[in-house]
Image 1 (tube, rainbow, N blue to C red):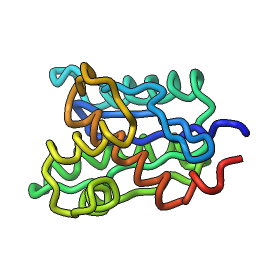
Image 2 (cartoon, rainbow, N blue to C red; image 1 turned 90 degrees about the horizontal axis):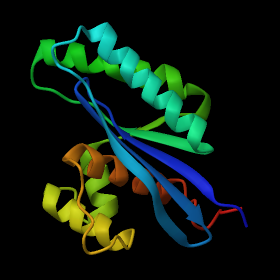
Image 3 (spheres, one colour; image 1 turned 120 degrees about the vertical axis):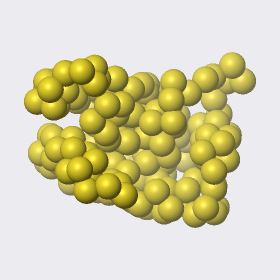
Image 4 (tube, rainbow, N blue to C red; image 1 turned 180 degrees about the vertical axis):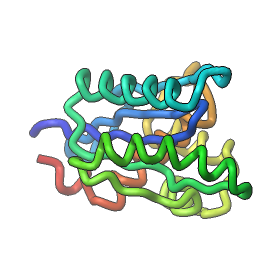
Length: 164
């Protein structure tokens, strides 16, 4: 039985969270995770290039089979336009994997059982689900959100039951 590698993304222009989870049979484990932190003083093009380079590095290191991202939202028109530049890079880069997108409420519902869960509740549920060590610390909410995205993809695609 081979392990299936899943990538979860919480895409933004300034701090993109990512997480690679492995699924083997019923077991799910954290392989690696982090954030792509951008220098906010740099032009959008430079930040997007850095993001793309990090995506390439992740794909070179791990045999990702499935990828998902959290759906973007913003209350301000200009912020939305900037955010969707970053979404475009992820969309193009992961299109061959059939990149899927999940709303934040869906992620919270799948991971915690409540679509209105707080960030803390989401992180606690992720810690339990992935059996993370007691001293594990999330680098940011972006990283934990990316883990939640990957867990949602695993559940929605029923990868635990369909593991090869």
